[in-house]
Amino acid sequence: MSEFPNAGFFRRLAALLYDGLVVIAFAMLSTVLFLLLVQGAISLEWLSMSGHEDISAFVQDTPLLYWLRLALLVSVSVFFFTYFWKKSGQTIGMRAWRLQVVTTDGTPLSWGKAALRSVCALLGLGNLLVLIDFKHKRALQDRITGTNVIVLSKEENRRVYRSLD
Image (cartoon, rainbow, N blue to C red; front, side, top):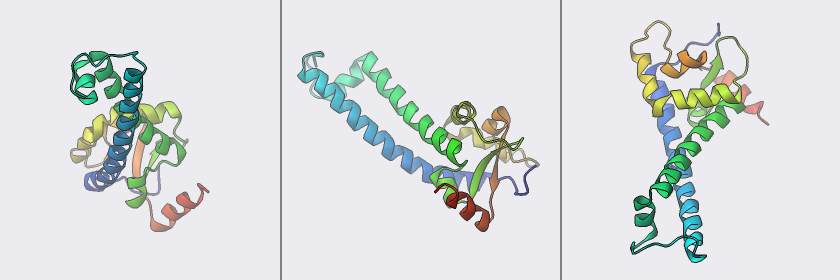
């Protein structure tokens, strides 16, 4: 059991809002790169816009491209959270709100556990469970993956951040 308390809903929500802005920025960059690749395929005549007025309309009306773009956006989001949870247990937003993901047995998160946790979070909706779990304050993703989100002291938060150097 950790010496730090588990994080409540509103603190988790605040961190998620910070992280959401970063994920949106990565999603926008990924979409631009994806559209550039599609434009390149059209320029090389590997694809034909077949009467569509722009690339966005073409991607929307082409099921394979539509699902590839959607898979790319989901992958970017999952990778963002997985990477940071694996690296330090903290995303950018979690760092700002002094939160950290830890396993219940004290071991570091594996890539698989961090990825599963990201998927099980259901775009943040898994945190709603914290509102009814008054005693343990665990979200859906915490229960499934055997993790907790704890509130660090200022000193411990600085120590975690410095240990990344």
